[in-house]
Image 1 (spheres, rainbow, N blue to C red):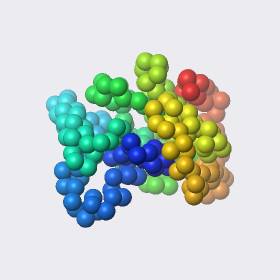
Image 2: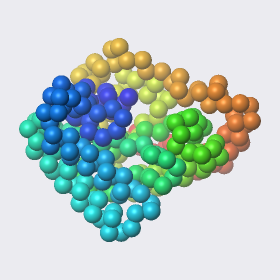
Image 3: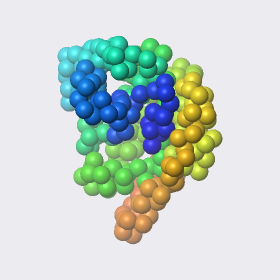
Image 4: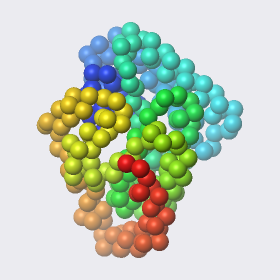
Length: 244
């Protein structure tokens, strides 16, 4: 949803993730942007290899080269030559289980001047979402993957320079979408009115965050509540208190 809002800006194209703004164009759908489509596929495949924990050093280094080359070509294609911002979206986890994990240090190292927008949500809701979408084998597996991803994210955010990263809580975004979009737009350098105008007709509400309480049985709800107790939530305090 955030990618879609950012993609509403005339300066932005979203080229990686579930929502890809450039594919909405008629010429793209008609196959008239072959080079753009090819490089978008390269981005998808390169990040998949780069952040595959089973890939060896040579594979990940080659994938990093593919990533930077794809970004360079994308910025010079006729269709995207006037684009000022490219949005690359990855979830944690993406694909299945804990084999794939995006690394913010790779992003910063490979893309000078990059802005990193991090969106986090209640780990209980996130765990159930991973289970519901088939990313994990069972509820406990999902909880472990979610916790490890959040702990890594907390450490990575601490290592980034001030002004590089903006943290958004999913729940706050749903409660106050206009305020959140104004902050995100300002952080990235976009017209806040243009991005905010995309709110019209969009149904922003935290309903998905409540599914673990309505679709899980009592045993599952109790497990998530017990697993993400005060001790484990305290581990994530750095993430929750990161500069907004």
